[in-house]
Length: 115
Image (cartoon, rainbow, N blue to C red; front, side, top):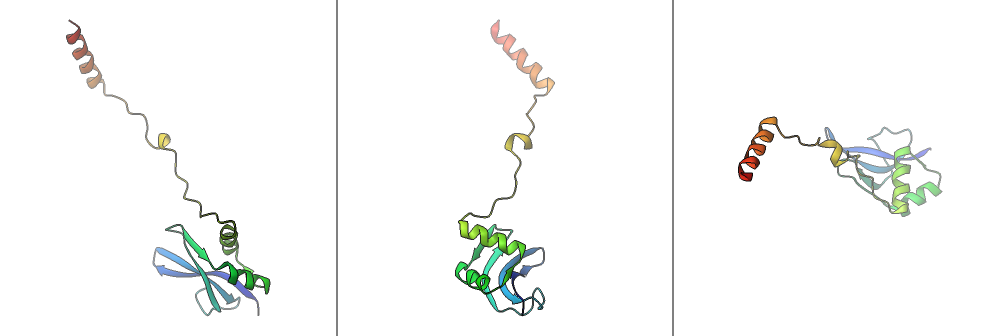
């Protein structure tokens, strides 16, 4: 029996969250599993893993999927999930330019006050 540590999909349509489960490799993605050892919610940037149980299963020959291996690695290091890439504030908003009418009106007011 090949035991895998992988994600099991849960949540609503277009709003998925996942459970980290230990399952037989032959069972379907959302089918029978042996144990739930954590959860992963990519929308809310939340993940938690029972590291003791994950270490137990890995020591007994379970193979973690690529995504679960990354989650376990982050949990061991105590590093939170990285936030989504956001563009810098300056790049998202172009510099504001004044309209020619506003600029001409401002100059006229300044010249009146000087006289």
